[in-house]
Image (cartoon, rainbow, N blue to C red):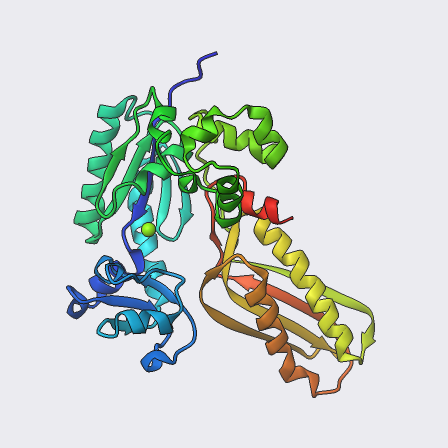
Length: 363
Ligand SMILES: [Mg+2]
């Protein structure tokens, strides 16, 4: 059965945080720019959030400790992230992109899927339309983006990353599998470090090698995620582009049956809350940048506190650490506690794939 042919664009803004900074502060143009923690002359803690393509030539990349970045490239201009600016610029660009799409799905602050099936049906028309989108982003917003055009989402996303910055990669609509075959397995959304290492140990490093495996093998290794992976590598993944509302924040609150005086019990309840919250965050494929707590004492005296992380994450560690620290202030009060809550905010979608193989493998 032949399903109706679709045309999908994956639009990814180039070095988005850095580009937004350069657009806002023209004096940064042409400089080596690193957005992230304060390097404090090489002694700083924290990480690189983003860096310009020029800085990448020195070996810098996002997620790298800022102290190492400073050692590699002390002459760069180091600036703290301005999240308000990035959100504002992102909203502007996304509203432009939305205007080009039959169906629109924002993947993260700087990425979106556009179903453009009514405007394009083959490589040529998709390329033409993608160029219009690129021109609009450049003319209206002064930013460049890279676009992948394909008959499905996963290959469009893989394609947008093939030719950055300011690139356009069109996947042959009738031969998605052939386009994917020579690429390394790690370009597949969802194949992270753990899954990649696992497959490398089996002697598999290209998508072509994966394609040659019996589907049953993928099923054995990855459970139902193997079905999804099979669809992706054979170009048959067929997930709809759909508008998904991402919540502003997510929280878990626990009210004690009786007010609690032992603060260890409060911390334990908060830790349980963190586990539950992170299960929700991960199963939805979100990442967060703000961690918070809420504590209510007897008599309804309620306090909230929050801590901003330097970048988005989908791991438990930063939330565990922040919650523990934020609770410290209230431990010494020695008052009976009625309720404790934990919260994450500034939520983004951290993966575009419906499955997260690495998490599955870790479980
Ligand atoms: Mg980007």
